[in-house]
Image (cartoon, rainbow, N blue to C red; front, side, top):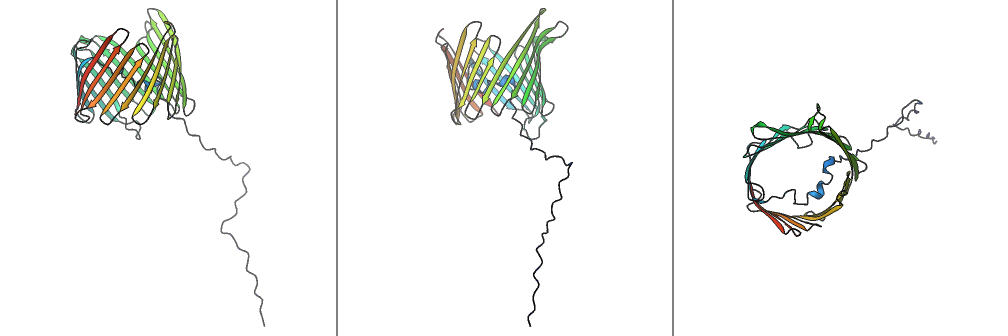
Length: 325
């Protein structure tokens, strides 16, 4: 006699059903969009292009001997002797101190940074840079003549936002007589590649007040960097492009609207294994070149540079040796 087997029970799921959504539940949060990168300070808009040129930024005339030595982990001193050229011979002693404070643990920059330079006549130039936190930093520059005579001072505050940067600079301020120079600049990142900003200058002297406004924009991508700046009576354009890992080219155009004058400069820089070369020429007939050659490694570097003006047939040459330990 056969016996009927009952059918198996329906399968059950181990995951309980989701409860119905509450009527007053808040909507799901939208993912936060990543912030744009820091555009950098307004004064560095043409930094890439001008870094290719040797004149007048790294040019020297005559004979130059420089010796740099690290005294400790935080301090370095340099001795420089200049001979010949259009400037009188002189000696410069320049100590540099770097503190241990890191406002950003992920960044290797340390503060405060104290840089000074005193020559054989007693003229002193000093610069102090300190960062209070990841966003706010301050810079002070001062100059004095022999016997403690004060020559001038410049103070700056720098604030770095998520996608903008603002600077405030005061040069020889005298609030009692409303004299001095105040400069305020702002640079905003518009997109990943494009940044724009402006600068306002206030100058008071002898009861007269002058103001000026300038605007600037920069487009930066992996293939090139193009910048344009417009002031009251001057227009500046620059273009920088890395050809490969060792070669860079740049061009700069300066237009003076008052004098009706324009100058275009073309240059290139090549970094080789033990040497670097920078060459340039402009539309006024000036041709310049700078060469740095390692002799016994990076500790001994031979420096050669020169410039020739085809219009005035004047030439300037410089030969130097830089040693470091």
